[in-house]
Length: 262
Image 1: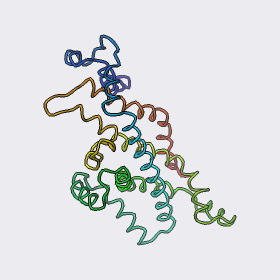
Image 2: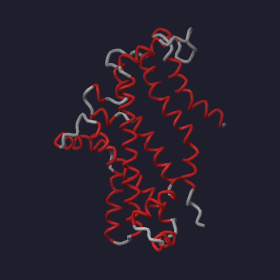
Image 3: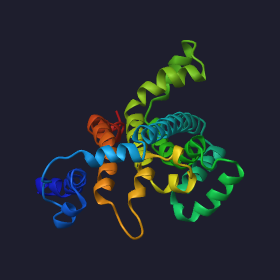
Image 4: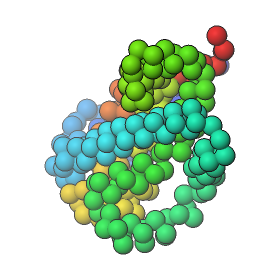
């Protein structure tokens, strides 16, 4: 059963990769058959047409910067909210979490209007800022639950040894939160790297486009260049497949860590 399910989920990846080596006629004749010859013409064309190094760097900058800010802000906020319980902390915590139940589609028009007034449209730093706003609630929720399981006595011992608030946070809490930090980093990296809709409404110039957004030029209203499109999608998929294979063990570690008290 697991083998069948594995093959079922791997089939779209198989179609994507082999279609990048096919001509349009080959794809139309049989989408799942192997190409007559493994020709890299589609990949070379895509590399030049959408400037793969440039859009790859844009995606890398946006993803890395957004994830780093999300991790730092949400972990520090969760630490303070957990260690300073009270009405104000509860109001702040649940107010931030309430954004998780709001559909993104209802925020698109107000988001574009506010981002335009703040001059965040068509800029990578503007996109990073928006990603932080949408990514912090989930990260805060996960950090909040994890920090509750960390004994307060560890922090008290650090205070006795002369550590201040920042010393406890950087020297004690951050190393202990490595499992959940890895999990949050993986989930948000996969989300931001593969996201299409938010860059679509935030970025307009070709120089600032991310890899998924740049790949969309091969999908038109009247025709689709499937060979080039699949080659472009392959460039976008391969880095995340490699990243996930390397980091997947930390997902289970982060989810199960702290689940059993003691």
